[in-house]
Length: 243
Image (cartoon, rainbow, N blue to C red; front, side):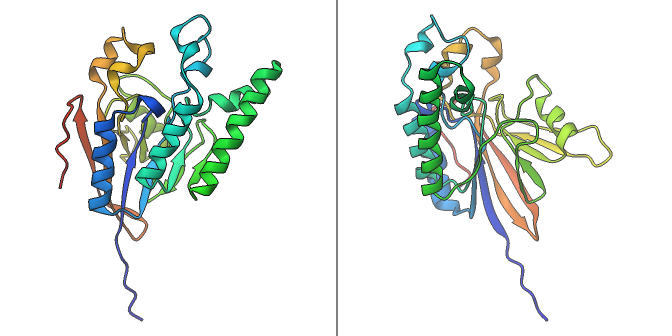
């Protein structure tokens, strides 16, 4: 019997943050997708921003920021990119947190938002991992694709040491690090697609100087990654795509 195995193309993005997405970055990854034609397209969370729903927003400028149009713009980007798989980030989780609120207005607002998001994910036929925790990921090609939850200069290494081969977003800083284990795992941080200067909550943090826009792409073969590349665009307004 002669069985032919075909390679499968994939790409992954993350942290686009709803109406805070950088339109140049959005156009670049959509252009890349149209040329590369991957079968699996991952969004690794924080596809919306929901600043008004964050804890501690009361009395700050975040309290007045829009919710519905932020969520709508985030979902429109998922649709435009043709996302097939999506994991929940900590910003995406905020409506779910309201479901257990003792405040009826908060609870019913949360339910309305959650129902709308779930309907749209189902309509778009996205494999949607709708929880954010240390065990929330999508297994593909020998890697765990997740939003991530750890911070720090060695976040990529720390995620790899906790989970093995892992691709995540969360900290907005592109990086590749090896885990200190005998299986030599790889941690890949794909950065962000947001307009970095518009992230008000972090505008005085030195760490934002190292934030970087980016995405991953590659091919899998026989259920494992054949090759994978991290495209780091830094904070440049122009994008020089691989092809």
